[in-house]
Amino acid sequence: MSTQLLSTLQSHVLTLTLNRPERANAFNAALTADLLKALREAAKNPEVRVIVLTGAGRVFSAGQDIEEMRSGGESLSYLEHLRVTYNPLILLLRQIEKPVIAAVNGPCAGASLGIALACDLRIASETANFVVGFNGIALAPDSGVSLLLPALIGLGRAAEFTFSNAPIPAQKALDWGLVNRVVPAEAFGAETAQIAAMLAQGPVGAYGLTKRAFNRAMYPNLEEVLEYEGQVQEVASHNPEHKEGVAAFLEKRRPKYV
Image (cartoon, rainbow, N blue to C red; front, side, top):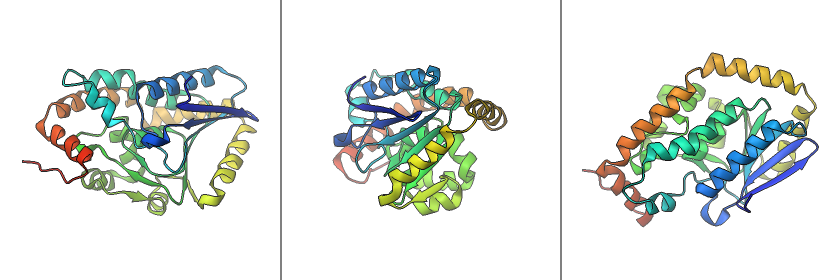
């Protein structure tokens, strides 16, 4: 495992820290692969009873590293990319029969929003905010966001904040049920650790069966949705709007869609 993902196991709580602060903890191929590997190992390790996912520094994650996607050129298939990266990652987070906590220590956007939503609990620092992100570069939501976000905050709110790309502040996220708790920044680490320790002392086997029941009741079509998101994203990626959206994002200007 590279230094892009830090891993610590203490008192049956595995903490995985996204560690690319110079890139706002954005996901590249190596970080995604490391996280998939770490989660698969955690699922089988009896010493791990709870998993906490967080970001280094002041940002949870900016989502996909746009520069890396650009480097793939026009031959890059977004559908194939999702099939080997975020789709298996979202499925794995839902299928791990142990509690997974997203400790959202700061801004969370794009694919990392899908990752946070796929976790069982979301603890947010008061400095956190949530940006859907995809429409900001003329893409459609992927990483399970098209299913998980409306399920938590309602279709109307999900549509508004996807179309507008406006940030959802931590307190509003709490009011809408997007997060379980909002914690002052200075107490964030301690409260997250306390919640994780409480869960680690509980009936992890029953937690796993509960996740199975929740998945069947709420997300029985998750795998199908992830595949369809990829197909839609493939269409969006070839639209001239996406090229303009990425250029505007990198040039820090408003896009000019025709």
